[in-house]
Every structure is written in structure tokens, then in C-alpha cells.
Length: 198
Image (cartoon, rainbow, N blue to C red; front, side, top):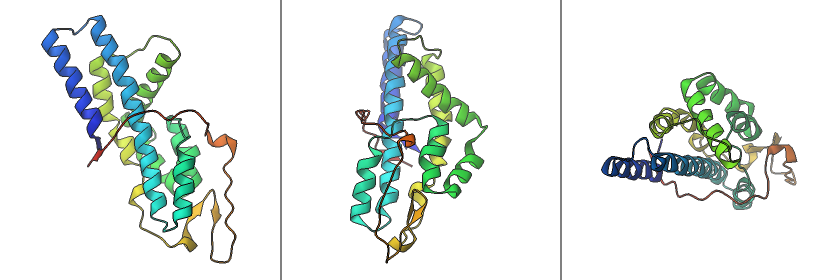
């Protein structure tokens, strides 16, 4: 899965470094930091888009609205949180599929390296990645988002839709509870337009 705006931003940054001969300078460092933030914002937006797309397949507008609003506060991009606090809350099957495709892979290592460097940057620490390493990591980390099965599931009726390990059926009064441990906060959502290109 390619994120078109990230790809375009990488291209612009590369062109600038090549045209100005700024490789190895402070300009490269600044562009690397900018790209780190941009990529992480795009990842966050894409994950939220996939969850919202999956919710739309339930065929229940109120449920879809609830999930779209709730997922806005999901901010953790660590592999552990994607597999547990996000996919694991949909089903053990989602988590297991993700685990079998991602855990222990180079894609997971590259993805985690991007997230860790972004975290260091946010806390005023030095980053440990060059522009070229970041770009290479971005392309090799694509599998992390590709392994997410949320948007690929077939549409189901409301009777079979599961959320937070509670099945809804025609006779139940749906009550949704998302524990604070889900990692959802009231922090502002990262900016970024991540139009998808498969």
C-alpha cells in the first residue's frame, strides 16, 4: 500500500537535496525530521481510515459514527498497540493474522525504527536515522499496513458484527465500552492527507 502524499513529499525532498547539493548538511537533517513527522501522521491517518472503512461495512450508521469518532483519539503507532489495543479489540483472529505476517520481520523493525525516531524527535532528543535510511525504511515498512485485514473483510450484517469482544444481535441493546487502557486520549489528531494508492 502506497501513501501518495508521502511518496510525493519524499520525491520533493529528494529533488531539493539533489538540486541544492545539501546532502550531509543541516538541511538534510531538517528535511529528515520533517519527513519523520509527515510519515507518522500519514500512518496514523491511514490506520484511522482503515478502521472507519471496516466500520462502514457493518451497515449500521450509528455504529459507524461511533467508531469514526472514537478512532480519532487513537494515536499510538507502536506495533504492540496496533496489534493489541487496536486489532486485538476487533478479534483475536485479526491480531493473529497480523502477528503471523509481521512479528519478527524486517518490515516490523523498520516501522518501529520510524516510530521510535519520531518519538525521540517529539521529546527533543537526537534522531538516529539519515534521510536515505528513513526513505528505505518507509518503503520496507509498507507490509505493516498491508498486513492489517480490517478493510478487506466482507460486509456482514449487524447480527455478526463484533466490537470490544461483545456480539450484537437483533434482541440486544448495544452498549459500547472502550477501556482507558485502549490508549485513546483527547489529544489532537496528527495532520496529513494520505490518499491511498494500491
